[in-house]
Amino acid sequence: MDTSNKDRICALLKSIETGDPGPVSVVNEARYIQHNPQTHEGSDGLAALFKRLSETSPRVNIVRAFEDGAFVFAHTEYDFARRNIGFEVFRFEDGQAVEHWDNIQKRLGPNGSGHSMVDGTAGVRDVEKTEENRVFVRAFVETALIAGDQSQIDACIDPAAFVEHSPRFSDDLTELRAAISDAGDVNYQRLHRVLAEGDFVLTVCEGELEGNHTSFYDLFRVSDGKIVEHWDTIESIAPRSEWKNDNGKF
Image (cartoon, rainbow, N blue to C red; front, side, top):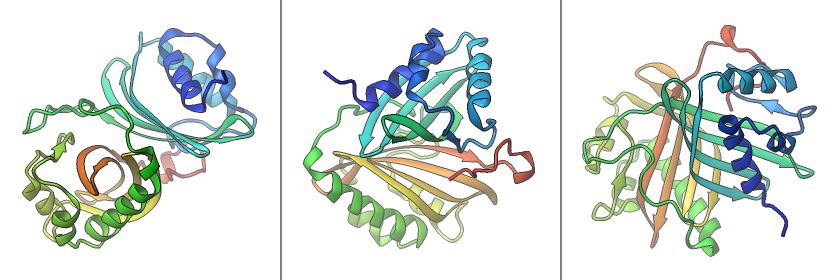
């Protein structure tokens, strides 16, 4: 049986911990486009990153992983001297990964409802509803988070079932309303990408948090046409003068 791209990426990420060089072959290093502004472009950058991480006695926990056409995206927990939570996105061409994005933040929490940044539902369901859920979540992000239409929070989220994993909020939706209000500190400005498999949908947005240029990765779980669970990572984007490649965060 052929190994899926999702399984190959999981092996690649786990090799940061194990030191096994074999899984790196999934990456076409000659064509690899790196969108982490703090990582050098090309094979030297990837090799240097893995060498640096291996020296921290790293631990890698792949909590959730998904596949959407040419893309694989994973929700991960890292311990590289400190504990971080991340989303990793890879694009495939001709059987190899040729492009990579990520969004990583320090692990915080649990939040006010007692949920961590990674616990909760992990298995994919409702694969036949992938496109329906993609369209639904895209509309929610564009209307509620970017345009600020707070009526869409009530229309799109099931408050009786909703589980919030963001360390900034709890299951109480009044906190989300306050954060995205005109007086709030969260400002979503542009939606760059929507990836989905079954009931899980990941959105990649650009905006500001407390006035700082920020990347927002939000993972939603949809059930019966409503958002019932949410995870995120929020990462400040370094000034362009500090970038180690010219590909941009998005």
